Image (tube, rainbow, N blue to C red; front, side, top):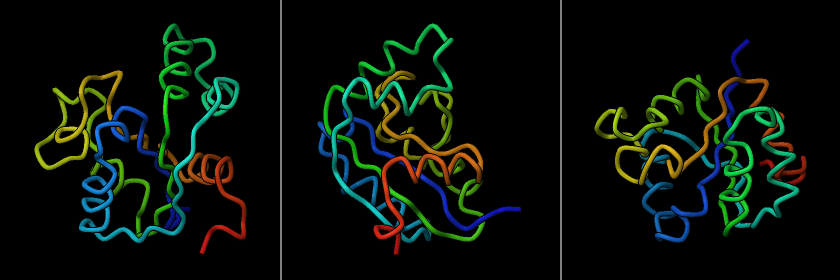
Length: 139
């Protein structure tokens, strides 16, 4: 059953490049409500735990290093059909393949520095959101 919430985080390079405002403006313009948001920084161990599902993949170490390299902005978003609609808004992982008007087309530097994470399922959205936010932080 589809829920109305999803999880996202603006990645370190997009935060460093001052794209928080531009990205959140695109999110809100697409009809999403920001339910929870904060700026924080992951340790390498925390990044490893968050991306544990990718532990066996060759890019895991590089991913954890990049995700702990600077501040991030995790958010919980709300909208009807949130996961699917947000995946469409962020665009393809490789910005060269992303459609015009998507967040990654506008803000990503490369496939590895693709500006933003978006949950791929309702189940993962709940797990990922709970990694960063307690119940009291989700309005």
